[in-house]
Length: 340
Image (cartoon, rainbow, N blue to C red; front, side, top):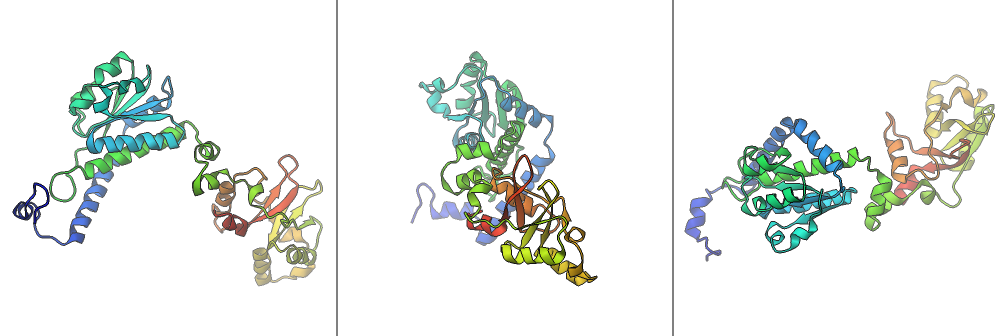
């Protein structure tokens, strides 16, 4: 039974008999090799493209492309939008029938075309020039007509398409897609986009919740806040840990600020070292200058501070912004319970 215009005989000639997983591995290998070459070829042109997109006069980006390149251009516009750079996709075929109204004077255009010879894209170049819209060409052909008309060229290379057919765009589309993602992320970093900015754009779903939550939002209403003074004995500190139920106690200095922390782990390590643990003062066993957070610290940042340590920590003192006085003890469990 035929499949469109392709008969069984045609398919037999096109597709040498091969195990499906072998074909899959070949496609993966083609993409990985091409991406490694594209990464190695990154140069000052990429920096120039980031400068242009991040510093455009209007702050808006118009992406365009046909076919699979159009799919890449749509994805690039979506990624830019989601990382705080206004962007819109312009279909080249519709542009000549009124959609050029999407483009404003001074917008930055990112035109995606593997060949650099896509007629529908080339036909838009005079209009972009009239509107004084600088063009970034994302192409596999650095000497093509599109590349010659562009201010900056992002070269995606000319890899052999995965799958053994030579078409449709597979490897080339993957490289262009990753190059677009790299551009969008570099622009976001250049514009100092942070979690607070992203939270505004992602109010729904788990991502928005993760970005919007603050430490104060995840603390239980009756959050523990065990404290002992700097002069406390280890016996007193261990008792405070047990009564507080947070697995740790904040050690406060003479001004009431958090000067140290003693955790269950510190106590266990002290026991293993021996040396009259209960008879000593807490100052000799505590961790001085501990990592802390404030009530308005993003919860994801609190989680990062817990994880970005040689030994992961499971509790953080929550302190007043100005005085550094302890308000509560944030537990890793509180972050997990909040879905982080």
